[in-house]
Amino acid sequence: MSSSMPIQQAMFKELREKSIFEQAQSYGFDYLDQVLDRNIYPSEQGLAGLTHFDEKMPSSSSPASAVLAQLQQYGAPATVAQLGGRYFGFVNGSAVPAGLAAKQMATFWDQNTAMQVTSPIAAKLESVVESWFREIFNLPSSTVAGFVSGTSAANLCALAAARYRLLKRLDWDVNEKGLFGAPAIRLVLGDQAHSSVIKAIALLGFGKNNIEWVETDEQGRIIPSALPPLDEHTILVLQAGNVNSGAFDPFAVLCEQANKANAWVHIDGAFGLWAGAVSSLKHLTAGMEKATSWAVDGHKTLNTPYDSGLVLCTDREAMVSALHMSASYLVAGQNRDGMFFTPEMSRRARVIELWATLKYLGQEGIDQMILNMHERALQMANLLKTTEGYKVLNEVVFNQVVVCCETDEQTRLVMQKIQDLRSCWVGGSVWRGRTVIRISICSWATTAEDVAVAVESFAEAMESYGL
Ligand SMILES: *Cc1c(COP(=O)(O)O)cnc(C)c1O
Image (cartoon, rainbow, N blue to C red; front, top):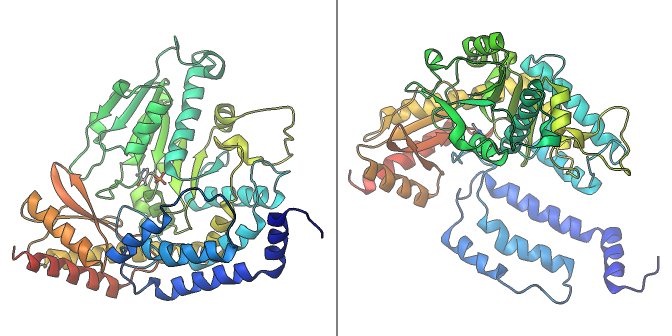
């Protein structure tokens, strides 16, 4: 192989010699060796090291090994130990080792999942995983899946499909005519709907002011009697897993009302839909299979690596019409072309690690892993109830625990202290008008020991203020 360009020569050499890949792997292994025991949030020193990235765009090339070394030296210490068992912030999720390893393999494949012809393996796995999701959640056989970056994107796609369908019923092709002058369609949301749903509504041009809000109960569940009359021009958005309390809307009764009226029901089930995959928690999602579309993450409860979410929809024609694109050079395959189900054309093959995670865990593994999250959440709540100064505010039905101290100010101070201690990480929120600490158990790695260590940290934080 001869080349006159020095950079090309260097790249052929790197590809053949593989030493930079060994270097990367060795750094990765060092990381894995520490991730269960290290401080959860980066140390002050780790954060200070980030200034090493403040440099001008380099004018000349650098040795690849030096690029990796910089990431290792100053990047790794500024990561959050999300893979371990004591990161309880947001609802983030860890990653199952088999999924991480599959993602590493897929890195070498570097596939584009736009079309079957760009990656037969990715197209195959997408159609297999699509059918596995139908099975896991008992969804109608017409359900199709789009493999997107997360639930924000999935909510957007589902609502775009709903917009297409509902306007089509009014003889209005939104793709051709747009929204100016379009007949009105209605949006009905619980007042605890996730901000990503509201963002999707804004992006799609519905206008936030047009949302009809429905009252929720003290856990954040829609109160069925508060539902306005629905009709076939209405999108009803429900939630499986409130981001604070983890509560579930009562799907059976709400879906029944919606189905009678021929309304479109979308369920935002980012992390909570997975309760439906666990034999002893299934009751939480009873009736959810009667919706029209769903958004769910792989990267939260299922613990696939980031980023991974799915939009699922029973109305294939509406999905494809909303997200379709065509151009003379595109070659539609006989089976599945991923780009017809997502906003993007080119996408990485995130389905590879999703498939690997499902294949590795199987139904049994999923059941055990998610049930453990629930049991650890119960343990956390029970321990905190007997820890001086803390009060648990929610019914722990799934994996979320909402706690507070005597006053909002105390809650803020104590949470800051817990974060500074770094033996776990929890974030803040506002729940029913109160400042709260939100604890989300969503890592496969969380053990009873991790929960005990975290609760010690809560106690230490409280004592440090003498509250
Ligand atoms: C996390 C979350 C989202 C957003 O999902 P991303 O994967 O972060 O885009 C939407 N809804 C709920 C209920 C969530 O918990």
